[in-house]
Image (cartoon, rainbow, N blue to C red; front, side, top):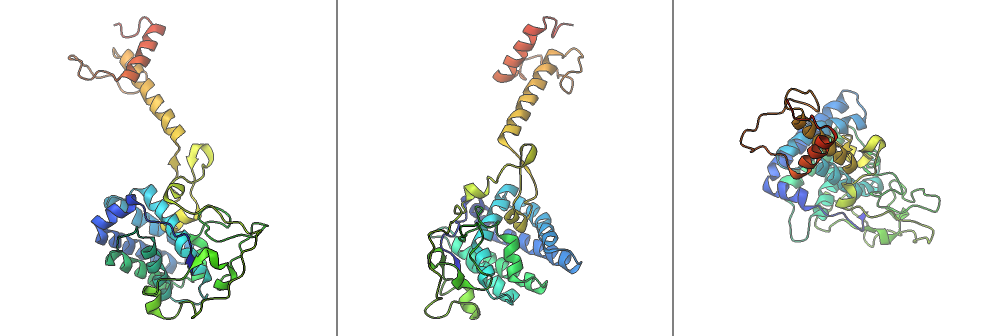
Length: 312
């Protein structure tokens, strides 16, 4: 079973993928080769996913998918397919996991856009590689999903904040929060993990149950602030690769911009040899390199404070 509210692939991802679906598939394939090698070397699944991201992330950037978009979409895919893997039988094989990945991404496609076959193939290959590496679906789900109660965890929690979903048991969650896989999708072709005829006897929605905020691209691309002004990663970003790469906050970027502007102003004021603010100022005989308005204002303030500034 999949979440009732499936995240939708954002244009920031769809544009590059539709322009170069084979490039996307190649990046995923190379990433999964690194994943398998890490697992075969005795590494943990977390380390294997990190190896996947180290290889796939730069290749995604080459086809126009920035790292932060790749990370965010990783969160979204995990929110979509994680519950399906967690509710699937514990002994699912790689083909079953690939079918779940393929159906999840297909269900995430924007209305009117068909999933390119290269993308579907990459999803199937990813699941197959996980199975070949000895990874089980519940372990994958635990790695890909956000912690219970946090955005991206798309299943309900009880009054104590604990998940109500029981691994391997789709009936453990209320019918309102899940939907069946596509009747003509990859899981249906497998014929082993589709819901029974008539569905499951789901538990009732308890008034004490809580649902986290649905995963969206805006939510995924703006994770909680970490320490020292940097955006921290979450398990979903790690699962799809590169999520441990901290991003500067807007406040930090603004501070850097101001520091740069002040440094430029000081350079201009000390252009007769003063070592202030960075490199020596370049000559500008025709005024073509005039400071912008903000930097000029800072330079004027500096001149007012030091009448000798700029004098030989």
